[in-house]
Amino acid sequence: MTRPGGSAPPERPTPDRRARRFLAGYPDKLYTADGELIRDATRTAWITDQAPCPDSVNPSLWRQSQLIRREGLYQARGSANITIVDAPEGLVVIDTGFSVELAEAAMALFRKHTKNDKPVKAVIYTHTHYDHYGGVKGIVSEQDVASGKVPIIAPGTVESFNKYAIGENVITGSAMSRRMGYTFGTMLPHCDCGIVTGGLGAGHDANFHFSYLPPTDPVTRTGEKRTLAGWEFEFLYAPDTEAPEEMHIWIPAIKALTCAENANHTMHNIQTIRGARTRDARNFARYLDETLVRWGEQVQVHFGPHTWPVWGNEQVVRFLEDQRDMYKYIHDQALRHANQGLTPLEAAEVVELPDGIGRKWYNRYYHGGLHHNVRAVFHKELGFWDGDPATILPLLPADHAKRHLDLIGRDTVLAEGRKAIADGDYRWAVQILHHAVFADPADTEAKELQADAYEQLGYQQEVPQYRGIFLTAAMELRDGVHSEGQMNTDSLDTVLAMPIDLLFDYAAVHLDGPAAADADLRIDFTFTFTGAAEQPWTMWVRNGVLNARPGHGPDPQLTLTGAKPALAAVLLQPGKAAELIAAHGVRADGDPAVLDRLAAVTVAFDPHFPISTP
Image (cartoon, rainbow, N blue to C red):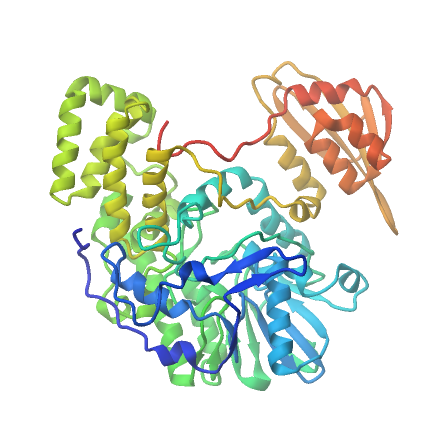
């Protein structure tokens, strides 16, 4: 296997950075009270501090994987992506991990080894990504939040936070789940030829369940403060950065700071390739600099959500400055090349970080990658078109491939692919063999060759998401589409927590437009809530489009009245409407057959669609 070229290797962190103030680790296997396995660290037990780097793993990724395997309870470091602040009058939990089970395990580990039985007084979400709110019901009860006993503080308005937290993971949930299976390698075996780690975490969790509770106390401007459990917390509002809604948190009593995921031990994604809205690299830099101005002279520790803290004022300031400069360099140099006429791909091939920031190990590519981040800046500022007239109205990939194969000939394409693999020219091998695979997805010989090229390309990658994509592509070409290990982000909790307008948006993307082109469906909904006023909505399908707005319509064919979870179930599963209406006590006035007509033009999503073949 050939090693990739590029800039000088990164500085290596020392093990004591990882081990400092380590209090207790998890057992190799974690189970729920019912005996369900939720974490199996034995799957990555082969990644030890002493083990040499396998030929099938990039050395930089191997080093990072060795460092992040030590998981558990740290002083001033999150456990399972959870930070517990031991304040005078109780606990303040910053982020909750991504699953109920791991959140419960983290709290149990904390209480066992610290003998701390203080109650949770507040929960803070730093941003709108599911791995930072999904474990909330393992931290606090829904009743305590609803009663106001435990506030949930979060950036943005409640409506905005709900919209981005839920919308990103549900509206495009099927596509995102499929792409996540590729980018995080969740369907690959844990071995030196499969998934190593995810770069920010060891990636050996299983059987997890997302939960969601909407925030109750929004932070919408920089400088807002809250007194929580006897300590003051100050916030810097940082929207449109690593998440649409995000904030930094300063705790003056202990001179502790977190910049959420705007500063981490990795280059982050400007465009996350699992699928999400493109981020603003300039904003990353802007808010990190504002943070330095506000608290840079005082801070003594920076605690991140995924990895270990940075200790000491000088070290924290240098860390934040290097992260700031990295994002600004990517932004500025991408646009410099854009203004000189380069396309996104051309710019991505020539932009390299200067050694002063590029060799810092916490700026390396353990989650994001420089190549796709440069292209993402183009996308954010200039849109999807790369500026080449030949790409504005391209042929579909399968048609393009067939034309190439007809012109060049299958045998010539396969011969060139074999030669490229023998020469270690794997990027070219993948591209030339792509024509043969997409022209004839039943061509086993072509698929096997391209799988070989993808596999070797994957072994070279420092970016774990690139590794996951290439190795999963190889697996799919050889074995077909896998469903095992694929994550689903559209959990029941997130669907039921949707604001009503977002609920109708979710239903609308399930509508088969051509099939519904001649449909005329009109349904009124009355959502009922315990202890709150009813909310009337009207929905109609016309011209192949599902629209909805507050209030009732003038001439509904059917009116449904019931609790939000029941009406959501009917709306999203109209084919089961009769049994759902009966089971949940929904009142139906009018023609129930309209739901049959809605079901006839509604499609269900299967996230197990092919990616490596057409």
